[in-house]
Amino acid sequence: MGVKKGDILDERKRHPDSCGLVVKVMGGGEGFEKIVCCGHELTADDVVPQPGSPLGRKKGELPLAVILDEKKFHPDACGLRVMVMDGGAGFQKIVCCGHELTITSMQELKFGQLRNPAPTPQAPNTSHQSNA
Image (cartoon, rainbow, N blue to C red; front, side, top):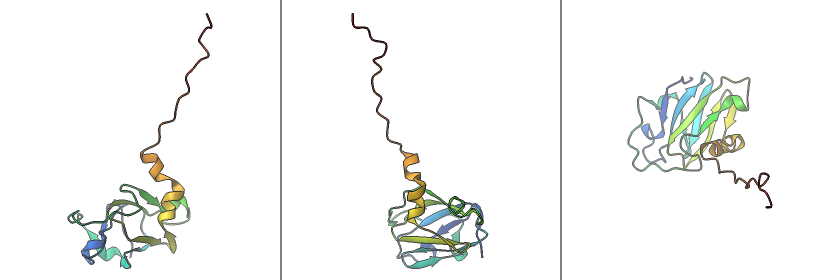
């Protein structure tokens, strides 16, 4: 039971007492099995036309707009790519094509660094100064 590009999964559909993880499928997904968050299993049954209210959703270590990409670690997989839209405090893993994507998938890919890169200090250029 896979998912497809554009599908939105909202943990609150079946688990209103959860952290309220919302993810959007950006690509792939034929081998999608489940997302585990707050001890709940989100499946294709949790697809919604649009996310519910953002009130009370609890953000975790997954920054909003981070993309987890199965192909980066498993090139032989269906290529599930999801973007975190809200919530996520209880995020544990995504299972797709028998592979698991966890918070370490995001850290290893360093997506957070791409969003707000630290400015590189520039040393003053003194090669054109004269001593006169």
